[in-house]
Image (cartoon, rainbow, N blue to C red; front, side, top):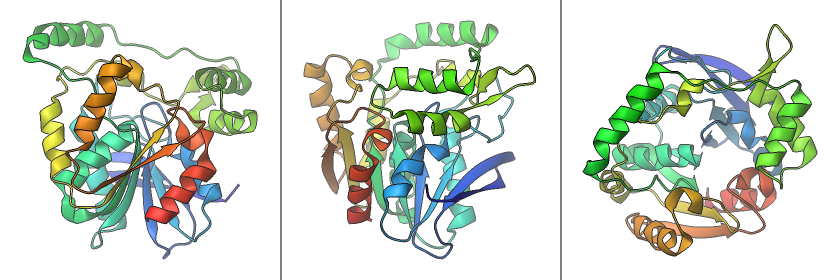
Length: 290
């Protein structure tokens, strides 16, 4: 494995963990992880990169080793604020190469339209957005949010690191044992009682009180000026979030049509965690595009 080093910086008042690979001064790639993941998740892709890059991968607030904000829930706009602060810290004057997976793909795609001058190129790994909503859903959504913040969720503990790795492999049957062992050591840590606790704030599980407004997201996508590479896995499970495949596929294609300069690629024999399943194929796409 390529060596990494950790750095802790303060972003918007939170102690933020950032992983670095490669040579300082080499071209930068910022890699942003998905929900209930960590920056170390990109290790396998970094291992497959042939050129010299300075890869920068933070843990989002409340994930991994980044501080939790001690709020009873999370607001999506805060991720945009954190990304803006991160880029100001590491690349205040130059537009950047961004890569985001899943939730990270959603954040980076919105950001690329909100701050188009800050993004040179963008790779979105299945950050397709959330199911569309209607205003009529608002009363029930607010009620659900109130119920959940009154009874905060908890994370189940695991008996050992091996148990954490087994859980990761159950979620993703393609995940190799050695990769699962590596991820487990970054995804969880032992507590004082020897139980392994997930390094993710349980508050991330609370339903957003704000409905996902698809057309607002697409207005941001339409304002992107950077070239975009959209990458999907051929065996992805995104359909379970978007509905039946026969309706979800046209909706995803409709959304992608809003991005002015979008190239598409497919990773074979991979699921949603395509950077774990086929890191070598993904690395080729990354270096070809960036």
